[in-house]
Image (cartoon, rainbow, N blue to C red; front, side, top):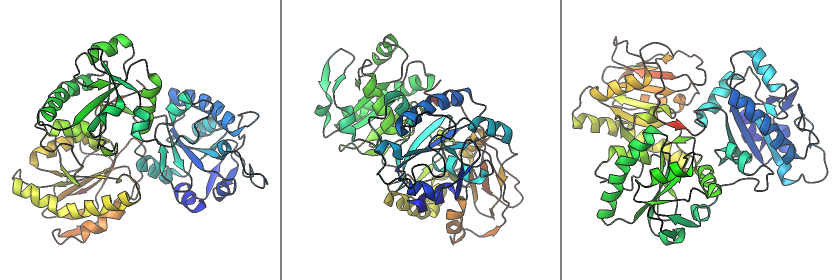
Length: 473
């Protein structure tokens, strides 16, 4: 266990009082579940979460008081002869994006859990990047032995299970979570068990969200085409509406099923199951309830005729308006071609597809999502990238120049690019000269590896686009 934890967190953590704690001591204490709390002292929601999380942490660990450093000292639990109660095997580590050390110190002082040291900026960046943290506060739970993500939305755990009765909050099968009656907009009800043998889409959406309403109009047509083609497919609407009246109004436009609005517990469990952070989100499942893609939104917009249903993921995507949103969801590699000719695009795909497949297979074997996405972009779609990443300027790192190929790397500087760059360099299709310049990129900012025509001088800086709504808005 300690090997994984040290690789993830380094050798030392600190308590709120500034005392150092050896990471390997967490293994000796029998820690089985690790919570990573991503936040910032300047965020009011983070301050609110810290207060409720402290009470939650104290209850689960059985601390007499959830005050500063309670249960988080270097000797806590170590040396005790008795096996610790399961819920006491939880530890939380704060991963900050603070840029001012005094503000960071003031914020962590009252935390009863541990924190990454302020100076560990690069390790923090790797964690933000690894777990694709896009908003704060965020709380995820990991199996402390295997490193697998147990729950991506720990905020819902605190709300739904304040006493920790469901510890350790591991994922349950979809059939178990969805079990119960589902509604049609005409008031009819049917049991979820009647959907066995069907592909399913789990649609997280709300009427108050403009992108949701836009997607719903397209999705209605896609749903109709798939059904008319004889495919066994059903969509289940999981509402994030703020009132039952709003839910009913929105649901009246939908020809599919919905979890009853009054069944808040089931809606929340589905959000927890898929770690939903923003809407609209469409999760597409196979007949066994296993995830085919979390990018159903992108697939529906890209495939208006639904010819590629049920949308198994492709190793390499063609950059388009509809899938450009994914540029802001994690690290991406974009290979440019100088022509809109289909043959050129296909050749470019073939260039990087073996690399993409190798990385995807590696992480699939570990039952993890691939850490980055691969795109091919022609001259027209290059303007999409410029729009998404902003004007030329900050956050640029040039690692490679090619006379024939442009490649842009978008993602927080984490060292991940070093895993796939040798594969690019070894490709016979790329003639190159390499140059490297290291710089730190802060959470919320972006780093690019731009492989461009010599002398082009093109570069980009990241700019978020408001096309997905946070569920905390």
